[in-house]
Length: 176
Image 1: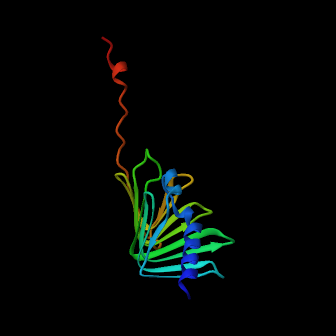
Image 2: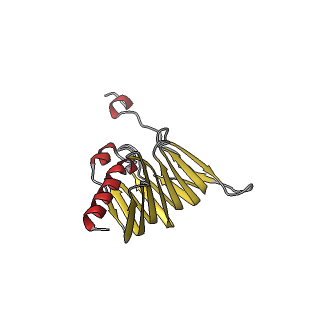
């Protein structure tokens, strides 16, 4: 394979991977950076595989993994699978929400379903709240977390911190 076609193929894969940015709206306009020890793009199948300390960043979004596979169909990004020991994902979905940090042996991103699925022993932390289970699914559209344990007796754990009561504005508290 010659260098120009590798660069063109990689640029195409990265351009199509823009929906990977599950983060701040302004992050979607930021360039996507991908680093890996090696990579392969099959333009016929639309599957690209990156291996060896893979790091993908776009704005506030950062994914690290041992291997990342990106699936493109009809010039549209379909899904991404990342595996690692562990794979780590962090992003800030909105300015008024704390950063989300996830870790598990496998992270899948389903574009159409707008879901991040972590499996094989997953941990998702948002602010002071923690969700753990064999499988933790984060629904980006509905801002909802689902978790399940392994096997029939598997257990999940949610640790939700109490929210501080909102205080009334100072002017409303006391009149002179």
